[in-house]
Length: 405
Figure 1: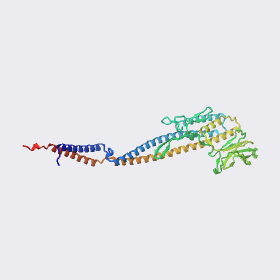
Figure 2: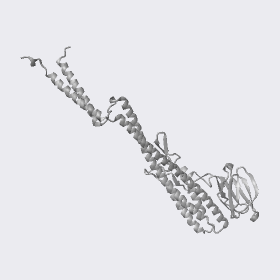
Figure 3: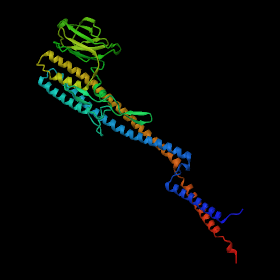
Figure 4: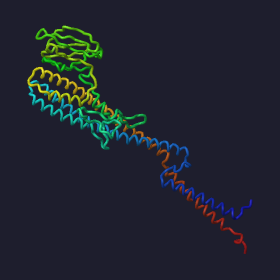
């Protein structure tokens, strides 16, 4: 087989270029410390690297969301803790207000203090987070959620949306409570029913908040206790207001004795006048703001030493205490929910860190260069390149004229 001089040169150059290319490629891998620089280096490994890298990027985003969720929940807990402090202070004031020996001016001073606490509560309900968003406005984070209208009623302008963050695959964590559920949807009375005195009562009877002794018997109807007679001959009738039926009549009254009605139990103390009535109604939603407003309003009404007015005030104070206890339980439940979420976030954060380590190990196995093997190959490629260069020099130097004399 005859090979032309041009072919000899072409083959020699091709060989050198192949060795130079292989050497250069290996040098790039060594400089980068990576086994895969392009998909052609290892198509399967490159595809796995992309998949694992994407999973790690998602995990990194989850980690950022976990941190953001922790910050938001911590801010919520701080504000709710301040709300709890306000309610505790108002409860203390309500206990003081129930003292029948206080003068009208004393009660007015307490009412002023309660009104101040109301403004503080309103300010807390309009709290903003570090980004300037309203914390209790639902999705309407740019709208002030609570404000007093012309009649003095606290109105809610937010929505019922609950903001969440994805903190793990398939897990969306609530990071805020909407203001309606937090401040407006609190069970009134003892949580099962409310007990109130009619404003027209003229006796000194005082009813306590009572309790549900047999919750399964609560029918959801409203009942009225109507008193008749006086002194030791005082009796009361029990009327189902919802159906209009008289449940019982002529029941003997003893001050402070328990009165049981359809699974409910209350105590009426003092001396109710003939015609005085007390109502037992199923608990409904009670606004925290209204609880404070009602207490302040009752305290500003002059009693002028009237025993009946003082009895009405004591019933109002007892009702306010029951509402405040429900409000405190409500806030504590919300704080407990936030605390449980924070514990879960700690667990998720630890789990994310473990998965991140696993992804790093997988990427290292797929991508990291075996330096011993790479340097060994580099040395062999240098030798091969030198051999190709020297052999080409020898072959290209051959000439028939070197042998003619």
